[in-house]
Length: 349
Image 1: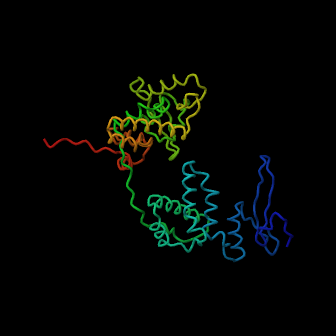
Image 2: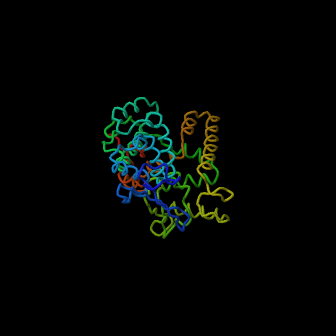
Image 3: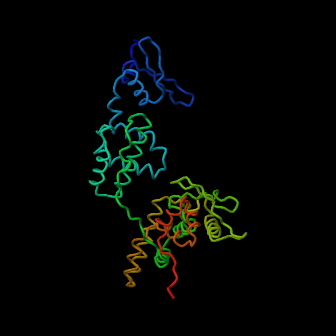
C-alpha cells in the first residue's frame, strides 16, 4: 500500500484523494478507494458520500460522525442552508441551534415520532416548536437522500401545536394616524407596500429598472413567484403608476436605482425602515393618548409594517384578485391568513 501524505492522513485506510488546481484559483478534489489488487475505485467529490461508499467497500458500519445528528446538522448547514433566501437562512440557523442540545448526540436511527412529540410538548414557545420540527423534518429528508438513513422520517404524522393566525387589521384611523407622522420615505414605502400587496423585504428592493412596458415586475424573495403589476388602466396611469411617478420625481436628484431611498439618496435598509416606523408609530400613539383616545392608542401600538400586506388583501373585494396580487397559488391561504375583515352581508330586511 502506498504511503500516506500528511494532507490525507485524516482519511480511512485505503481511501485517498486527488487534488488539482484550477485556473479559477480553486482546487478540484476527488476521492478514490485503492483495493487489494491496486485498482482505484472512484468515490466521488463529496467527502461524506465517499466515506459512505468506503464503508460499503470495507463492509464496515457507517462512521459514527455521519450517523449522529451533529454531523448531519453540520452538513445541512454547509450544503443546504446557503441555497435558501437570507431570511430563511437566519431562521434555519436559529432553529437548528435550538434543536442541537437535544438531538446533536443522538444517532439518526434512534429518533422516533415519540422523540419528536416529546420535544414538541417540552418546548414552551409553541409556534417556534412547529417551525423547528419542520426544519428537522427537512434535515431528515436530506439525510435519506444522502444515504445516511433508510428509516422513515419520524417527523411525519407528528401532530403540530395549534396556531392562531395573526388577525390584526389596520383600519383607516390607525393608518392615517401613523401615516401623518411618517417621514416621506416611510410614506412612500407604506403606499408602495399597500398598492402592490408585497412583503416588506420585496418592497425595499424594488427598482426603477423593474418597470417594463407599463408593469412593475416583482419576484418575491420568499417564494420566487414572479408578478407583473399593472401601472396603467385603460391607457392611463392608475394609483400605482402615479405613486411611482411621484417617487421618481422626488428621487430625480439621487443616483440610486431603488424606489425607496432616504433623504440622502441611500437605499432604505430593513433597519432604517424599522427605525422610521417605530418613530412614527410612537408619535401617533402619543398623540392619541393626549387626545384621550386610549383605544386608538392601543391599536396603533399593535400596528406593524407587515400588517400592510393583509390590509391590502382585506380591502380588495375579489378574493381571486387579492390572491393574484399577493402571489398565492391557492385562494384559501389569502382567505384564511390575510383577509382580516368579515364578509359583506345584507341585513335580514
